[in-house]
Image (cartoon, rainbow, N blue to C red; front, side):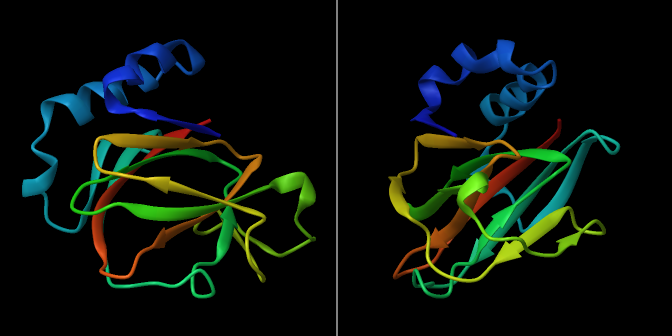
Length: 146
């Protein structure tokens, strides 16, 4: 997992060949103007989910992992708290290949605050519970094929 300021995102380009294109999109797009949707940048390799969520508690935020994609989360309108637990510390759970997601019961072991102007990178080994906020938020999740 990586938590950092968007000003520093280019420092992580070398971690994956598609990160440069993902970061280009983040820099060159008016994220606040996006409507909830899925934007395909490279079919089956790189896409953006634009999400609008209402309020969510820690108890409502399910821990999730992905086998095929790396997530780049960027809050736009409000900050959020995100749960984190290493996948190795999570119990066995059923993987849904259709949506590349495993969901887990229970609370995360740790929580971080992610404000607008920041981003997180979650790799397949990172369990994360996004979207905890008392007021809701708009965000993008860039999905990068691992």
